Length: 313
Image 1 (spheres, rainbow, N blue to C red):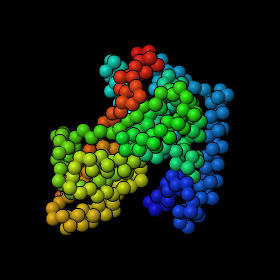
Image 2: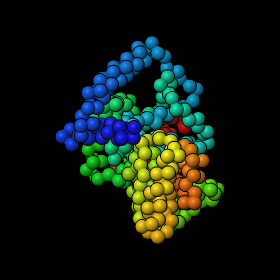
Image 3: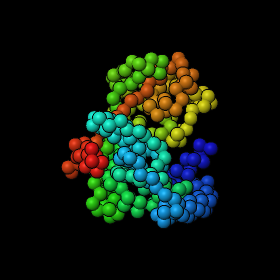
Image 4: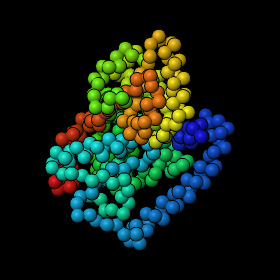
């Protein structure tokens, strides 16, 4: 199943079919049909909302929507946390909802994965798009996530696509900055990032952008960084723990001392108990926070100003 998921992802993000295997080519007709059906259902649903057949409800409080056009790795969760903290600074206690199609929105933020923005520009499942790119028109703010890991030319290309659709849309750029670790068996104690200096680490993740996680660890400065990637939102099973233990023993034999397992907060929150089966290997959870990268006058202060202006805080 993991091999099949990987093949679907590769089809979505690679435009040159000459590089595809027989498995890839055999999947494309089925994915194309499913994509057409998905697009038709999406169009019908949106039309029913526009016509008033499905009504939208307005809450007595401002509503902020943090959305994404593509699957995984867009930074929705850290952005929601980022906004919640800023609203708390204004004395507002936010309520976070996971579904909001039927709600009127006061502010719409579209998150874009700078590492893999549009793929082949096709709708799910043939491509990574949940909606056509024209949906950017609904947004009040665009945010390019993982901008620190992207070449300047690629950022310019993303900006060009966004501004061709909505020229006046303000664009912000963000990165994930590691803050500290906590150990699986002592979650109340924060550990300095230097705890992994000169260590051998195995990065284990089931997130949308494992590359960004691994790059963050490499920048911290371990002696060696290995990785074990699973598909986004995957829940680790005992068979996966056995594979991890096998890789850890290989690393221990190679370097002469026990490696450290590093996971993200999202992977820890998904199932903290199963990770305890990695004992006696140490498991650290990397805690990071989103930061806005100042660029062309768009910085954290201007972002907060937009929140105040659009929400009349």
